[in-house]
Length: 423
Image 1 (tube, helix red, strand yellow):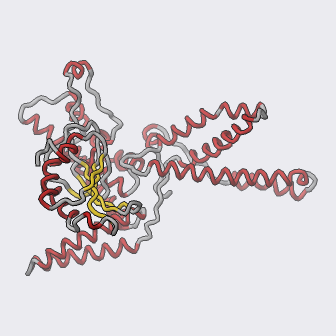
Image 2 (tube, rainbow, N blue to C red; image 1 turned 120 degrees about the horizontal axis):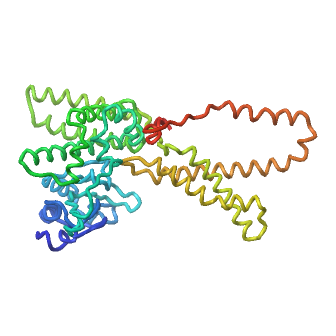
Image 3 (cartoon, rainbow, N blue to C red; image 1 turned 60 degrees about the horizontal axis):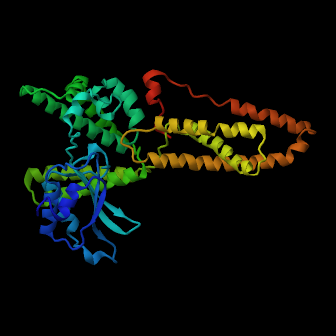
């Protein structure tokens, strides 16, 4: 199949996420498509994109797809150097990966492909010469290779990659940055000059030994989270699926081997089975919230009260106090946006869902507060004449004051936060 024509051509010319239906595809046609479309890095996109291929579905559409289509496609992808990554996302560190997914809503089976890209930077040489080379020193790619081991362990990872899946993606990004650094060293060994941006990345690299230690430590953290069951439900499902797939592969190897090799494989099989049983026994009920969730929810409750005043504004019944609160609306919205941005982590697909969860909590708290206020208003007139009611009222602030306040850090610690992931 010609890479410049037909479906392969459409794929190679795409600059945004696309979806294609492979109904009716045969094995040779599937193989030719994958090789033509993904055999070499794509040159058109200027940012990471995702291709979704429909390869099966429920009984209403099942007849349109061969049962072997997913197998044909994954085999062809592996042939051109792609690897399966069940946690892959539409980020540059996931280039050259794919994953299978079931769209339960549409009852379809899909394979998502994250292509390799060239990401050529512009075409105007004069423009490039006029602009000084810069590197984003706050980017994951730079910080992961430039930070020392202690900073990496105590500040960066706990603040920017708390979950198991984030750590897994972080490890992949770190390994990719180390590979890129090795390519720069090879370039220098050949006597070739580095581009200005390459030189900045090279100079910022803390060194192979320290970065290797980071990889070893991060791998240990990933394993520890699985062993201790510190997983979300989705992460547990992903680990189980991976272990089950490993068992299927090793079972095939066991059947095809004999002697000492077979004994070693059986031992490995037993180890994987024990690990699978351990993971299945975990509750995996971890729910991650934004690091500054408590502050955000508090401000959102206040914002809901301000928004409620807009109804009074239509009826021209606002008091001077109401007007003052309304004027603070934009400041509240800005403060919430700032806190959410400060809480943004790396390799996190759940950021929007976490923001939505804060809004949901704020809605519930506001309704509860409003109901309590309405109820309190009805009994206010009688409370002043009763000594016992006044005594109870004095006790309430005492219990609230007993709650310890959270200390705020400074410098690097303040930037990355010291929150635990036991939210």
